[in-house]
Length: 356
Image (cartoon, rainbow, N blue to C red):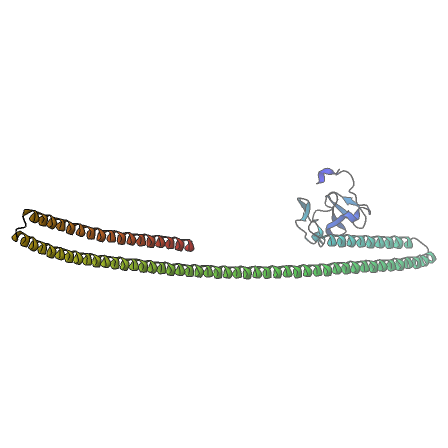
């Protein structure tokens, strides 16, 4: 950082530039300063005001630059209490360091003025010396009063600064407490919202499970009802088939009875016809015996043949009537079975629709 300055020129140490400089280390009357604005280290005799770019004597503590920050290598007996103010202090500490330097500057000026006044007193007359002493002490008193006033003012300013800092700290604490309270409130509200959400989710799950159970129960009851209806339909169809079977058996029995009666009637008619024929033959024989002639015999034979034909025709008619009755009974049974089958199909279709 020294390359930006001419080492042949005097380092700037004027009073107006002092507030921007901080002492790094002090040994004897000499102090090493680091100028904050320029980043340059220079040396100042606090008594005479002389300055130098180089250390004032051989055993003065060595200073090196680490980046933009000076560091004292071998402080020895030097005072480096202000080194903590370099590069890594806060704004308040920097202001305090500068105020400390200004106070030191005022104290040096006061002491220099007193030394100059004492030197003048030594060259004056006794009377003048007495007046000068009074003047000097008056000036010293006034200077001390001014210094004390300045110290008081600085103390008041420092107290006001500390009070302001304490107020700021208190406000910051209140703000942080409010933030913490707000965060806790938000966290509590979020936790409550999560609990409500979990409760609502659990309630929804419970309702869905209950609805599912109700739906399953309804489905089970519907299946039971459909099964009962199917069983009832099957029973009704079985009853209808049983009734149809009974009707068929009754019809067959009736037909058998009719066939039996027809056969009995035919047998009776045949027996009657045979008896009539026998009587006719007997009469024909008698007529033949009485010599009524061949014509009578032929007539009797023709009558006998006609009687046989009538008997055959009667048997055919009876058989046809029995067959017609059997066909009618079979048709009725088939119609009843077809109607029962149709009803069973319709009932099963209706049961499937109800299950769906």
